[in-house]
Image 1 (spheres, rainbow, N blue to C red):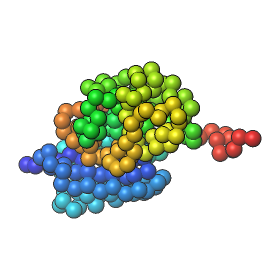
Image 2 (tube, rainbow, N blue to C red):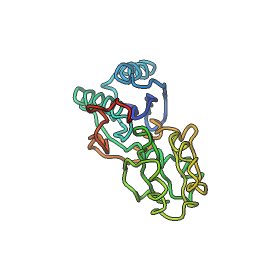
Image 3 (tube, rainbow, N blue to C red):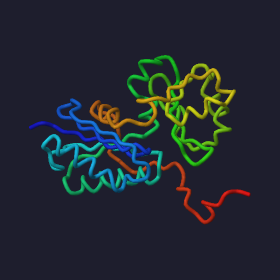
Image 4 (cartoon, helix red, strand yellow):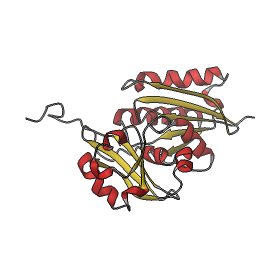
Length: 230
């Protein structure tokens, strides 16, 4: 019987599903859906499985991005996978969004000697960030940091010329004069974490069976959250 893995990623505004059969990518879909993941993810999954003549019980492993990223998006994909796994007894494996960005196989090949930094949007003026050495060891665990404080944090990793920043949100950091010597990879496929990369890494034996969300910080939902500062 063919072994099927489905990878889902909704940690950003791009909803993604990738299906692998016997280790081979057989279906991929990615759609920019903003904050509508709750309505769109299950149809994306159903579309992918239907295209291959499969049902949820034909899937042996579900891979999911555990964050950080969009609070709502991360919650949607994790809840969806947990519900499917509960009903089908399949295996669930999680990987972190910033690790997926910084550890993208082609990014590693393009910058084999550089320290890799994954960057994703948090609230306005702030980013989620994590840094990894040339061998993939985590140097800075996922953290939420103000844009203005990014240069000092990155300087703690080594010479700024030895760093490459990945992720669409990193493009805005390019304007900081202190980061002029850094390399930047902000276009597809390095703009957001990719479900295809998630699936490939889980197939390679990476990831954790604990798929608890990694939010890093509480959601920005509180009295006054929508009030502009004076």
